[in-house]
Length: 131
Image (cartoon, rainbow, N blue to C red):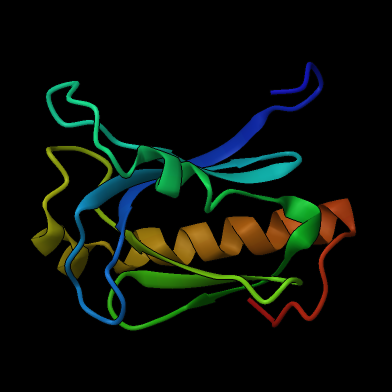
């Protein structure tokens, strides 16, 4: 991170496979003052071969155009380059099992709110819907 960049918000979750509720990759969504990062979540400190793929979903906050709630605890983030990232929130404590998404809708909504707020404050992005 840049010296003046700071973390605004984090949310545990996973990157789902297509439209399914399943995933092989746990992730941590990290909102900073300049970027929206996705960090791979390791189980028992075992390296996952998809970690580079998870990190590649990260984007500059200035490139984020929308952050919208989707079904269940899923949120959809789009960039001005046409990239779309789906992220499913899980409860902030515990192991983070996929079935926790049933109870994680408030955490999804908070992530959407925080991303939209960060974009409004920085004056970047475009096409942001109302919270």
